[in-house]
Image (cartoon, rainbow, N blue to C red; front, side, top):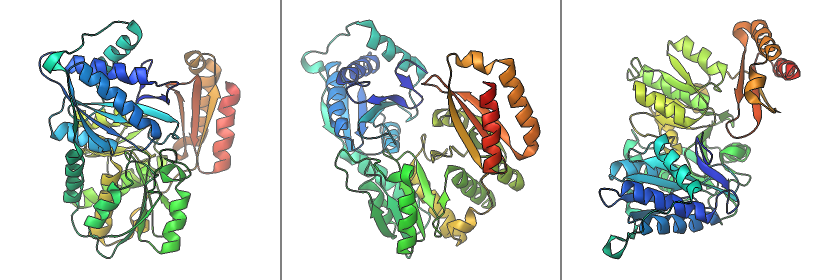
Length: 439
């Protein structure tokens, strides 16, 4: 974790933590770095925040000043930038978004030429440049870069998504909550093309309403919408659509852990899962692991962050991985979490098995979970404190196979996160507080 770039890019309040100058200099560095031996090509997408247009202009100015060509997808999703970077041979991709954060925040996510999270060595170089005061050479004459309208790349990505569906959705009533974000036009286009009766909410972005009481962070509205309209299923996206949560026909939330279970089970039943494992983070619910154990499906656990899930999948060739929050990665189809793709894969399981989502997800039971954040002066010192370690050990012994403890450091704040899973909410609360008392 660097000074500016975390696991999901450089993020902060627009023009306070993340400024136009930062964006300009990031563009300058990327144009220079990738343009050392050829004319660099960089593809850029953005979400619907008011500040995204400002940052797009600043990045383009920096890139072209260093001699790179900037190709603009305009308002689009993070996974579309990943797809286009990989498919169209770009040096790297940039997505301007703060994902599920409120409109006044924004972020710059960097992807390499394979559409994966940017290599740490490049991020380290950018951070050093941001703080150094060093001046990079400017391009001159015909070496100055240009900006190119590349909406065609976004349209090709939509075509790719449509091509992945195994059958028509005719007769299926599908609800979509677009969070007033990146999918506000795209998601309906995909589901309409596949024949669904598509019902859409929160698809009127105004630059200030992204994620406001909508989308995957406020899924209760989609739950009500599905029930009120008698829909077969609903899908809720976040601001940049790299995550997706679902709602079954009964109005129940189907989170990322449920989706991992549904899709892994479906692939196993179809004989395409083989010896692959489901890649999760340490924050996935214990109910997922017990359900996978019952199916004989293996799993691996990584640090928190879809970046680490993707790295594990890539290194080991696993087919599916993700987080409870709805970042789901399908290894042979994408290099990053993709909300619309996730919805398509859930629809595939429903259509091919001819079963409603409530039945498909019923084999996994969520364990109650409690997470509390504790402000500390020294995270490592507290983690290594004998009293704290003893408290954790005692709770683990008392819970046995019917619970677990996760104690981890925040990557960006002076916090320790204490999470307990157990058989009841009261027991979770009791055990979390016991560990906090030891701190």
